[in-house]
Amino acid sequence: MEINKITCSDCIDGLKQLPDNSIDFVLTDPPFNVGIDYQEDYDDNKQDEEYSDWCYQWIREIERVLQEGRYAIIFTGDKKLYYIMKAIYRTNLIFHHFLKWYKPTCQRGLSGTVLFGRTELAFVLSKGKPDIKRINRKTLYSDTLIHYNTTNSDKYNAVNHNCRRPEPLYRQIIQGFDGKLVLDCFMGSGTTAVACKQLGVNFIGFEINLEYVDIANKRLQQNTLFDVMQPLDVKQDGGNGLPPTDKSVGIRPTIL
Ligand SMILES: C[S@@+](CC[C@H](N)C(=O)[O-])C[C@H]1O[C@@H](n2cnc3c(N)ncnc32)[C@H](O)[C@@H]1O
Image 1: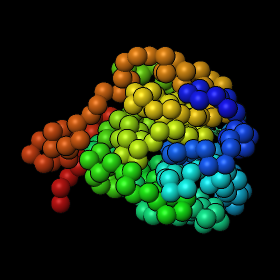
Image 2: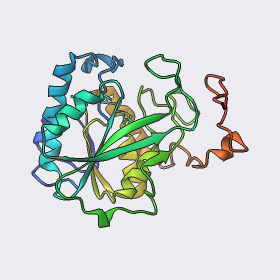
Image 3: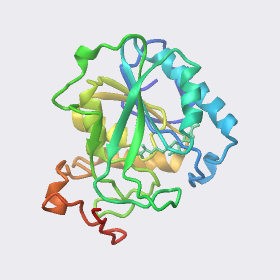
Image 4: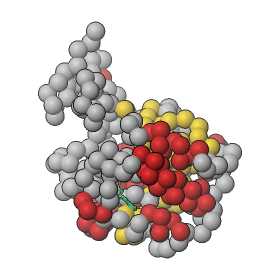
């Protein structure tokens, strides 16, 4: 399996090519089974138990390829969290807590409720007792990481992918967990690969959709940072400690 290349492959087929205990850190963002249009390669509307079984297939492969004492970070959506958690508990990976990505600007929740979704969750898992000495506490000082969301149409962006993550968030996670050979089995538009390149660490990645692989490779060829490093202090945007105005939907939250 080639290092520092995004392989166009089904994640389970790709994972099966990797030797046991060969991966240093996993950072991955699977489909959440919430009906997102990923083009024709993947049905994001499976039956819940089928989704859970599918998650088990790739999570147990992650368990096999991960080195002892090392971490896997797996993003999850709120709604189908139970089914991915059920898959995790079928393995021997240890679930520690959630890593929270807090977005300072409002975003209407996928569920269409009156609440505005500002937080996304990722499972923090380890294979066996984690080697906590390798956690970089200057970089990862909290379980809540604050980064602005990326959109599909920002001015730096030629990327057309529904779920592109911000590079600064991924750099913070990879650095914080001291990833040296990072695996992402759902590369999408290649954020993990780009963050690894920026940090000078190695990666292995799979993505089933050839168009997304092309997008990811184009991003990788760029030498500049794709997402500008965003300020982490919410006050800088809203002023006086108030939450910032959401420019995209024009909503200023009311403080009660
Ligand atoms: C949530 S997106 C990942 C987005 C990525 N974090 C980024 O920043 O661009 C999930 C990706 O998994 C891909 N995918 C779905 N099923 C897959 C499979 N069986 N094997 C590999 N990739 C798959 C989808 O095409 C989609 O691009």
